[in-house]
Image (cartoon, rainbow, N blue to C red; front, top):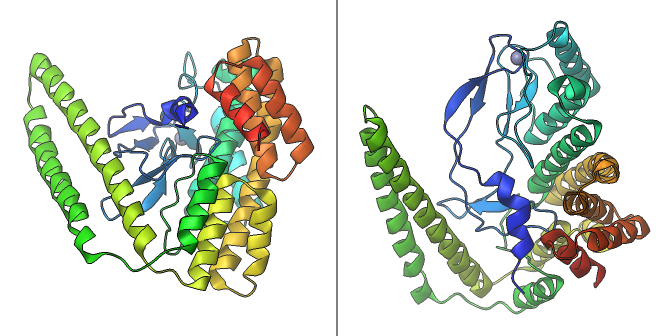
Length: 383
Ligand SMILES: [Zn+2]
């Protein structure tokens, strides 16, 4: 089956952003970088909405991790776009004392993690710190208790995605794009049965690459025309840019498919096969098999680093689960509650809390049976 729920869960990732610097919400004259990066779902989407884009070289990255940015002044981390709702902001400027409060949170977080003042935070750490900051500021940002917990839960969930990405995107990638447990099985069968690559298959990727290069030229030309354009011309240019974005996404999807096909034809060693399987289980969130896979790679350098990130992912999923569960209980709208409870349930499943996961997924299915979250809950329960 297709993965319709992926679209619902990643909607918040796909809003167009404008490359710019925005002011820190604390009004301390610090700036946040609001990045604009092209996106595509060429690397697949995990059950909890963690989506992967591919770049021109076939490399992958987790999407939606560029919506939090560090302030140049207070060094707090804040959202530059909303996640699952509007961007929270103070109605009439930041209240007195808030700047000191955030500074204290930043200092405490760095101390707890033994991160020097000059060192940068990882994406995962940026989201965890943002979760703490929005948790502390909640009511003053005009958020209800339920909305605050939903937002903080989503921030912790993305922190967990950052850790998962760090675990699965290292080393040679096997091009795994899981959409169901059946596909996981098929993927593993394909991995085991790989044979020599067909050299004639290579050029099709180069054709796509050339189209992507042409697209880059068109994009730069459009950007040049945007400067000094009248509002009416600008509107037309923006429409043209949206068309280029769609074309680019399509090309990347095709490239991802082609690379996956080529990957299937390449020979695979015993260690690579084991690592590819391990990545598959981590992305699928199969707690037991991921643990077995990690245990099987004793002494392997990549495995040691993967195990550290997987432990970090599970810790962060624990934080996300607690917030999302509480938010789901406070949410009156059954469809929104269904999505929050689903995300809590999937976070529980990925931590190996199987009976809690079952109860939460079952509740999500009852709350929003027609929604993507409800359908995906049913899918996970059926396995
Ligand atoms: Zn600031």
